Amino acid sequence: MSKKIRAFIAISLPERILQAIAKLQETLKGSGLKIRWTRKEGIHFTIKFLGDIEWDDVEKIHVAMERTTQDFSPFTLRGEGVGVFPDVRRPRVVWIGLTGDVEALRLLQSDLEDQLNHFGFPKEKRAFKGHLTVGRVKGRVDLVKLAKALEALGEFRTEPFTAQSVVLFHSDLRPNGAVYSRLAEVPL
Image 1: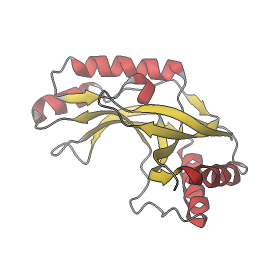
Image 2: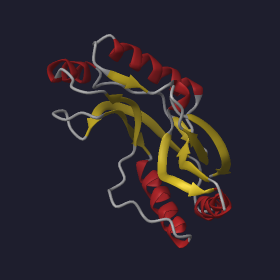
Image 3: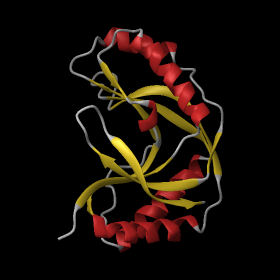
């Protein structure tokens, strides 16, 4: 019997982008909102959340990643804007949006979904929305404070960065937060 692991496919971010996001989080922490902030090492751009998979599926996922990336070159993205999902009246996730070559990103994600579907991984039902999760709202939050904080950071932008590879991560959930380890990486 194979061991189950929690996994996802993502694009890693350069250290300079992670530093800029950490500064944004520090600014938001000053607003006094009840938000559990994503640790810097846990920020990445998720392309496909796989959930619990069999350890034996790692090789199939790696093959799907290789088949997908062979048609793509590195492309440039930028973190831009701050918002919440699902909306400002019921905030659950604090995110940073993405700009740049988002069409290449959308195509990469769509092609990866198709390749993984060949191996029995169901396609995501929701539309793909490129973003970086930087925090999760805990309980009730002062919506006026939240709106002011988001408005003040509405002009947030990182430097451009190049997406050069996709990574299959193992997510080990622990009491003090998830620990991520790379299982496979495929260059664009």
